[in-house]
Amino acid sequence: MLPVAVMGPVMGDAVSGANHVVRRLLDGAMPGYPNLWMPIVDVRDVAAAHVRAMTAPGAAGQRILVARGQSLALEDVGALLKADLGEAAKRVPTRTLPDFVVRLAARFTPELRSVTADLGFVKGVSTDKARRVLDWEPRPAQEAVVAAGLSMVEKGLVTAGRPAAV
Image 1 (cartoon, rainbow, N blue to C red):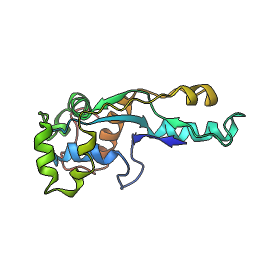
Image 2: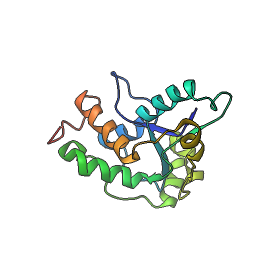
Image 3: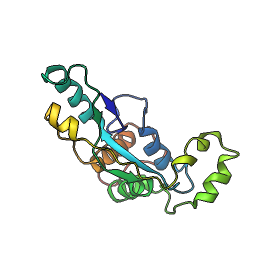
C-alpha cells in the first residue's frame, strides 16, 4: 500500500503524518497558507485498504496507491477547519502567502525548503487500481481533515480550545 497524505482521527496523545499540518493550522503556527496542494486519504480508509489487500486475490505483490484522487489546497484545508470547528479554529490563517514570500522565508526556515519546489503544483493521483483490485471506495478528503481537527481538539492536542459544537 502506498498512501498519500494520511489524515484523520488521532488515536492517542501523538500527532503523526499529515495531521501535523492540521495541528499547525489550529495552533496558529502558520501566518498564512503556502500555495500547496495535497492529495489526502483518511487513515480509516488506509486501514481498510490494508485489510482488503490481505484478502483480495489480485492484490498479492502489487503496489497500490491509496488516495482519494483529488488534491486539496492548503487554503481549502483551513477553510474546512474554520467552517466545522468554529471557535477552535480561530487561529487558522485567513490569507495565502505569495510564492516569493515562501521562497524568501525558506532561506531562513529549514522546514520550508522542502516545499518550495511544490508551490502551485497540483498533485494529481489515480485511485483506479485501488478501486479495481481492492473493491475499495475512500471517503471524501474533507471528512479526514475535519475528523483530524475534531479529534485533536477533543484530546487537547491543540492550544486553540474546544469547538463550539463537538
